[in-house]
Length: 370
Length: 198
Image 1 (cartoon, helix red, strand yellow):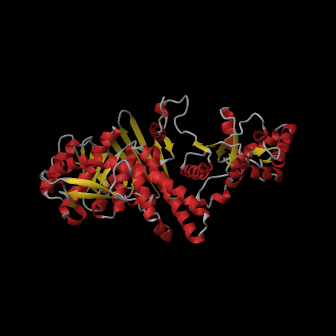
Image 2 (image 1 turned 120 degrees about the horizontal axis):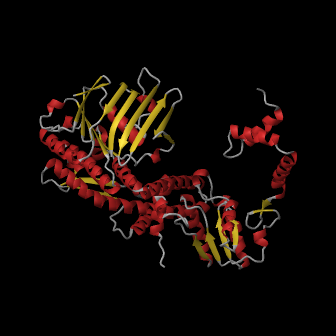
Image 3 (image 1 turned 90 degrees about the vertical axis):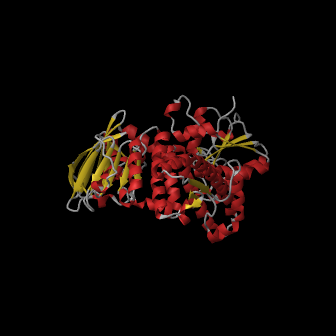
């Protein structure tokens, strides 16, 4: 899938910008605060109808104006036009796909798959387990609607069950215990399906990560992701182990009125050469791992969805040594259409701009081609 | 323009109904105003009869004209089977199929701690009472296939099975006559997992 062009009106710094893109690499160059990342924002908006850093729509409106509009043209087997406009007086956003209004974000998500490599990615390797679960869940949900459905069901079960645990703690009503058993059964059933999906994903995804990491580093370092749930489990007896573990924590769950066992507490451990990255990794290994995860995501999604995602990279070269910058720019040739922001192109003598690639300069919200 | 009071009243009442907005309510009210007087009278009488003559069956909580509904009193129905549903409207849906000749029981909801629905709020005690006659042999759970419905089914099964009754749950899968390619992924996934031998 290729993004041919976009038009931005009053979108942050961009009062009126029209951009046409290369179907290979697009380098977006400019100083700080000139509006390079805004272009990635706009692309992300069109693919997901949401902002890249989850900020409210109104923050994307130019300071002097009252609305913004993003128009884009995608080309796959067919052409698609996307129009997103937001009016700060009404406080509402309208999304139009080929002139037809889209009311559910879910109808767009997955149609234009996108992979992002941004500053906040450091949280995936350095942050809490929740960040890693979010990373994994978003990939599996995009590839499998079944997983998304189970995931929603599981979260609903968690809320129902914790509400019931609360009621038991408050009222001590004995009739509530038999209901708890029923909710526990549902928790085990949906939770086990989540675990099974995650195990399968981890096994498949590991190959992609290994491949990506070694392409970037070209070393003998071997990355590996291991999956940590409530117990060491074999694929077969998840339900059994789940029930056992819940039984152990039964009293504690009632005291704290909280769901203490299940995949909502899982973690994914990233290792390099069998050493845990989070504890023993160097800054460089963290950065490389983060980049490898996104490249792995790109190729995983490409293979499982049969659609080539758009790759957005925000200022990744700033923190890399020339060796890895060179490796990544070589690796980029295997990817489809990408958008890469950077402060200065000439700093990277190893970066190769091919004839088909585009260099776009951004200064104070206006765009020039080089 | 000032709308005459009787008209405004009808518009306001109609717009309280589900899926009817202000404009639709106005169109309906004006349509009634223009309609034949007999037709409007019949509608008004129908609405009053609906509230005055229809009640809930004392046995199964189905909607009924008499104290006990037609299904519960019918001699043609198989009294050994009871199909448990969430709402009376589900009975209408199952009856349309002509595939079930047993009796029904309306639970009046499903378990949902978040909305404060527990066992006491459902017609479960009344169902257990029906087993006393020893006629019942099988319970078929036909609740919605969402988290709450599934959990309620599990609860009911656990409650009823020890009494020596056969308990089953209706199957989930693909719509008949529909194309596999048009079904949503989750339904197909479900159908593959719960495939049956032929």
